[in-house]
Amino acid sequence: MFENLSSRLDGVFKKLKGQGKLTEKNIEEGLKEVRMALLEADVHYRVAKEFIAQVKGRALGQEVLKSLTPGQQIIKIVNDELTALMGQENQELSLEGPHPIPIMLVGLQGSGKTTSAGKLSIYLRKNGKNPYLVPADVYRPAAIEQLQKLGSQLSVPVYPSKTDADPVEICLAARAEAVKEGCDVMLIDTAGRLHIDEELMGELIRIRDKLKPADILLVADAMTGQDAVNIAKSFDDTLDIGGVILTKMDGDARGGAALSIKSVTGKPIKFMGVGEKLSELEPFHPDRLASSILGMGDVLTLIEKAQSAVDEEKAADLEKKLRKNQFTLEDFRDQMVQVRKMGPLEDLLGMIPGFNKMKQMKNFQVDERELVRIEAIINSMTLQERRNHTILNGSRRQRIAKGSGTTVQDVNRLLKNYKQSMKLVQKFTKGGMKGLGKGMPF
Image (cartoon, rainbow, N blue to C red):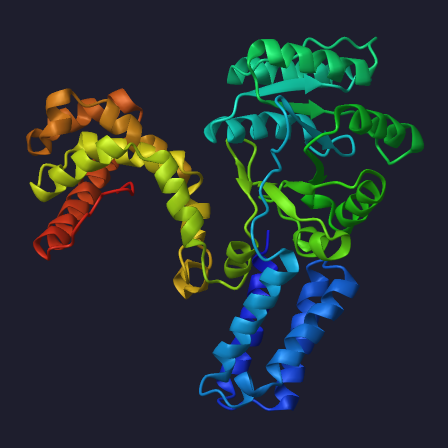
């Protein structure tokens, strides 16, 4: 989402670092370009103006002009101010009050409320909660059906709402059912409209006043840019929302909504949807996103993804195998499967500091189909072949290629890559690198 902005900022910082010594004039010239980059990224004009004023005030102070590395100091200031702009730190979901705790999801039609309800139920369950889904959009039977399907898919109970019932009565009845089910959080998927109107807001106010939710989350589509910011302000003025779930953050929008919402509404972005899968909802961390925009990577999120994907017992077993040089093709496949659970490889690589700035990586693309081919090839081997690659002669390779729908060249390439990986592992283990393979898929 932030590729263009990152590229523009990188160009500005390269110029500033190339100056050696910075003056008030070249700082101001650089900040003009930063302001243009923000406006092109669809950041609210007032937010961009205030941001530049903040950066300029610090940049013209002693910490930059007298610094031995003024260019780096400018980057640090921009990073600090970007983080502050988006809310400084992650704001958690409010879960205070008697059980079942009501959480309202509000927003316009098509913003992704229903899918976000399913995603949020996964997040809550991972954090030890027992969610209950409540379809309160009686105007769209498809919305009720969609939430029921999601609930069935996720094994999360769903209240059997009817389209001829009053939304407030549905929520009150659902609360009683949630108690019977032993659930501690109610996720209420409210109705949306194509635009904000008095009838919609009146209904949401009635639900809020009766249910007294611990949190009201606006679900907004990041692809709509400044419209998302205006929508957030309208909903907040009426309902006093607790925060925002920004969906479609994996799209090709310019990112202005993410950088503007907190400053305009005063309310934080609490979660962001980073893909279509139900597992692809992440807490919003302003500091990590700022680092990512400035090409510094996002190592903390990468580690968290690894920790959620890795089986600790398997990781410990893998470490022993690596030390004893017993890492087989079977292990190779299993580790690749765990890495794929973490998300698209391009996204993971983008979290590595400096990766996107490397010239040879500018047009780098990961072919996920290659990973599927590798898995198919290894699965077409016998158990003996997977555990002892040295027996793979010509006829065996032909059989494996035929069984996996690939070519002998594909099989040969996999074996070559596997052997190169083994050589690398041996170098690390001989060098005494402790804990290789522990806590991180190889």
